[in-house]
Length: 78
Image 1 (tube, rainbow, N blue to C red):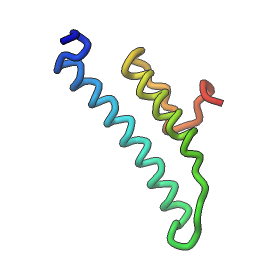
Image 2: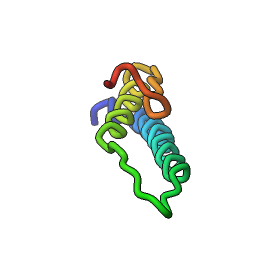
Image 3: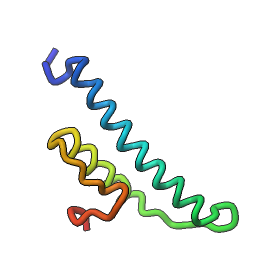
């Protein structure tokens, strides 16, 4: 097996994926609660949200840099 798929590295990547995913989920849940989804429908640009999530995962996983694009608007993605 390639060293990149060693258990130690996979565990670290899963932690990164989970942390970024949890931030993204919390952002969407907060948006739904703010907009009172019981009464109204809101529009969410899922493509942009997944792009932000991917940027954060790649930034942390490869460059050890948190772009924070899930929690705030990133100048990298326009």
